[in-house]
Length: 408
Image (tube, rainbow, N blue to C red; front, side, top):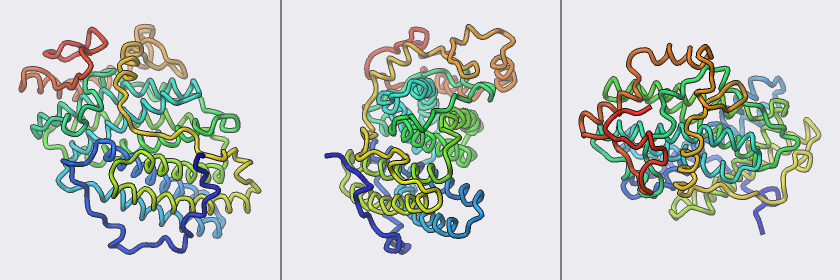
């Protein structure tokens, strides 16, 4: 039988407040932690940050003190959860090392969501951005070896390949072309709704992380790389958030956020290999069940809507898990490497007219040094070739196989 959070009691809100000691866990050992335990930690931090940001926005658009008080309670409790998760990261894990973890999240989460997505519009959006995050992992891996003489293989192990994706230099589009058609949440499958919330949370967290740590890089080229890729993450957040149904009410989205948090914690719990982390996922799941019930109570009182009105199923859909997606990524690389955006449509770059806004935008932002190209060039000059981790043979795209020149 599947798991239904609506049938569980969870932990009452009044029993969820914890002491400083309880929310200050011992960090993990970066040399021992399983890569997918790290990715679950990174993703769930993003899920909790999105929950806090959403509830702050809800409160800023709500004049009812009772609603705001109730939102404030669960927001404060979720902030405690966020502290537990984010404080698991150790101080000896450098910004670039944790960046490798962020990009492994982006690659394997996006690939899994695309593989299990039922809506073609959403699947196409996931496949498109997948190749860009895949390239970001490659650029940061080259920076890691340049600046810290460390190989990203130690972090990703044999689970995620590292090689060029859609080159970052060609990812910079005019903002008009980063907006997708929204999905109708009244007819969409519950898994599609959860996928959209999850990928927005993950990409938003990555964007914010790079915005804040990019100025900590040791070299000008490192600082430039964070700047450049942070701008692409802005594109990705726009790309994914535009898929959400803008006609959904604040209360519908509140319930959906809480339901997704329950779903994601249960997904983590079911696939976790670390016993300590299992206990954290279990505890947070029980807390989130309490938050879900509180959100449903608000929706019922102020909008007259219950779980059936919001089409919440009687059990969770297929769970979201981290697993190796090497073959899937290689297939998308082979078939979609040259895709670009023209409004809502995906087209080959060579089909865009020379006066298209894409080319005009490219000429401006890529004038002079392009950090994502320069970091690979410096690596080649220093090490004789770029850094890669190709476990299933040569690159599936022939023109991207050369390792001693910078490719586009």
